[in-house]
View (cartoon, rainbow, N blue to C red):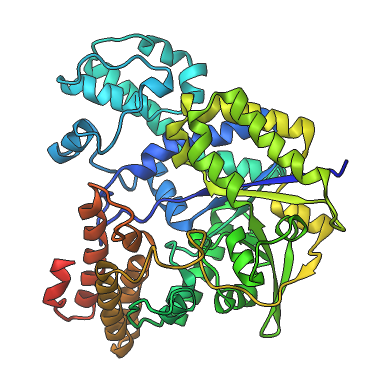
Length: 492
């Protein structure tokens, strides 16, 4: 039977949570995801020796670096704001205790208990199960100030360990580390928002065009990644898997060897559902005298892990996954072994799995190693290369193969218009230093998250916080230029 190569690409991302000139993050997700999910994911890889690809966005790794150095913090700590405590009590920053194997907290009326259980809920499962310090907290207890301080210190240790863990895994050759444009912008939209009409011609799309910013976001990401992890990445996961011919031509020009995106992009490119020999093989794309390799994720398998398997018994979920991969091998007709790519967020899914996904992932890794050939994307490409050449490329993302999640709705379009006004003002500035300082704020505001949370598809009680970060960086750009921000910016 044909040997199936299985490549997991874990995408680790958090947006930029710092306000202009601030040393305090508006929301705590960098710290919490680091202490719970990024640490756990690294430990699972260390334990099993499983090879894969891990993608870090630079706006995340830079905040991790600043956190580890003690240069930034967030207010979600015992001496933080009342607002932070209220968000935790209201469940907007959840405490997933039962799924972690922790007893349900009996009463969170006392601040000491609230914060003790908060830190426990956001501690890596590996640490909870293997560190002797966890024994004190395996049953309901009444927390002391000393307990809270110890748990907070423990969480800090986990956060500081994250980047060194992944760098060591990368240095060993076990994993391949890749990047994304710096602040996680939708690269095709930065190049020209008119690209959104290719998939949805009737949508209302505000004009925004900043190819210089697209290049700067990608170029800065490549340099930052080399600083953090010690080597320039060969591959890139474009934010939200968003691609266009123009965006990939830019990345090829910067020396990016390969990109990954969604299988539905391949289907739209071909004008039909791809055959297995098309979905599970890398492709060469030639653009403007450059070439870049493109791999397409299996959307069914990726979405099963992201949204479905967490509700299943571990054995059933793993066996279902294995049977689907085995089916690829049975009737394989490709000239090289199949590459089954699973690409997904590497943090959010585990909230919905028992014990933060640890039993599932350890079993999955072990079984994939036993039955198939796990690999990184780069290692597969080095061995087998592309087998086919793309005739072109559809413009879209891993959500519905279009850009509708980030542009086209009134609230999103108003934000794009405000961004375009600020970007035009920067362009008019005659002072190079002032222009560069203002542009730094514009780059933050180009991140995809601010538009994601303005979509009617993605309601969240935290939307005002995301809107504030966007608004204040756009306003800061105007002020750096010595100009008053437009009044309508305050209503966004």
